[in-house]
Length: 171
Image 1 (cartoon, rainbow, N blue to C red):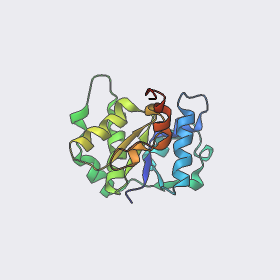
Image 2 (image 1 turned 135 degrees about the vertical axis):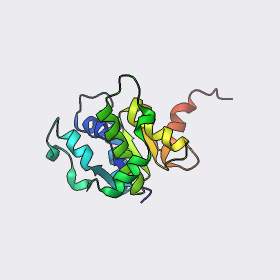
Image 3 (image 1 turned 90 degrees about the vertical axis):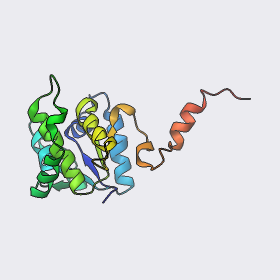
C-alpha cells in the first residue's frame, strides 16, 4: 500500500485547529488524500497522543484507517534504534513514539508520513530514508502544499511552476 499516508499527531492537531499557522496547508493535503483515495492511517499511538488534547470524535474518523500497533510494527520500530537520534532537549518518550509511528508505517508498507513536526518526526523519517533504512518519504507542512513529494522524479506540480514563473523575465 505504498500510496498510503501515515498521519502524525502534529498533522492532526494542525488539521483540527484553524488557529494553527499551517491549518490551511493541512486541509489542502487532507482534501488531496481524499480526492486521490489515498488511505490515511492513524496509529493507536497517534490516537493516544491526540486524545491528550481533544476528543477523537472531533476528527473525521470515518475517513481514516485506525491501525493498532502490533508486534510486527514493534520489531521494525526497534530495528531503527532510536538511541542514535537522541539529542539534547529531545524528550525520550516522544522520540520513542516517533520511531514507533515510523516503524509501523514502514512495516505496513505505507509510502508517506505527514507531519507538522519538522525538527523531529520529519527529520527522523528523512534521515532513515537517506540511509536506505526505509522507503518512507516524510511530508512536512512547513514546505506548503505541493505534490512534488508524491512524484518519483521530484517533478513539481503545475500550480507551483506557475507561481514561480513570474520570477523569470519574459523575452
